[in-house]
Image 1 (cartoon, helix red, strand yellow):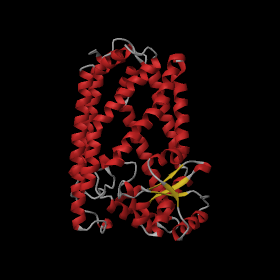
Image 2 (image 1 turned 90 degrees about the horizontal axis):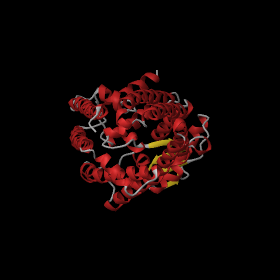
Image 3 (image 1 turned 135 degrees about the horizontal axis):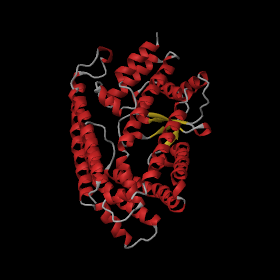
Image 4 (image 1 turned 120 degrees about the vertical axis):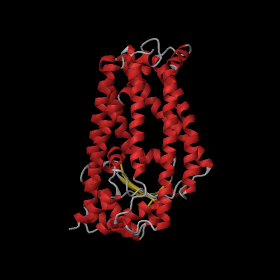
Length: 412
């Protein structure tokens, strides 16, 4: 069990934890920095102190939850619990497909139970304390059960197919499995808002009136065909506001949170939507899908090369080569590659956000977009001064200060 691969896995888990803690600590060291004059007015003094308390509370909670998670992982690895689970399941399951599904099913349920107290505390203590939470305990439980069932059904189907492909066509498993996952991902992009979101939220077409007329007028000016504008009842869970663009082709739709409509003026909402349309005009959605598919192809190519190695299964506590134990070990060993790819993807995403902001500003909506971003940051108690290293690693959107300066520059 304690082979070279085992110690590599342990090293990767510990190093990733320490790096993440270091970056988070750097970010926390910037709490309390003076707010730049260009962002004056986002918080008054009382709300700024509340924002600082919210950031520090989340930081400390993050340290606690991450430490607990890594301790559980190290104990499970050190005691060979994954190998024990594999051997126990083999008493009842002989099919490789059902064995894999049973193995990851048990782990999924165990992770859900471990995460449940942390999710509950985050929702009903932290978010409640700072005035964000609108979720009832009944809705929280329903969300947890729906999420678990959805993951079991959808994840089970995909995992079962991948395992079956591996058992039947091991030489080309990686390529066919990648094709299956790619097709599923594209399907979800097309139908997520239409099929999945309604399981958790109610979406209703934006009613006729000033806001819809303003949105349609801008869409026509921008040469953007838009008929699907929906409002989602985000307020039943949180006071935080958002808007997003989903789907492709005829399935594309704009979704506005009801909290966004409550917080922003009509012109500010139009500016936010101009930003979203900017993503479409610059083909950001398609380019990011392509990047994601290529990164997945690399992952599956490496998985296909390494997964059959018995050393991976032995490192996880197994006695024989096992597909699911190989996947578990590979997932940990792949983490440095995944992190590097994540840095690239986040960098591309931040660039895309600047371009979408500039697109909105090109229609004279720069000031409205800045006002909207400031209001949303204020409402969410966002950290206005994140550390550059934390931004580089974790932010898919540029910090507010950078966006405002870029928008102001784009206006000239």
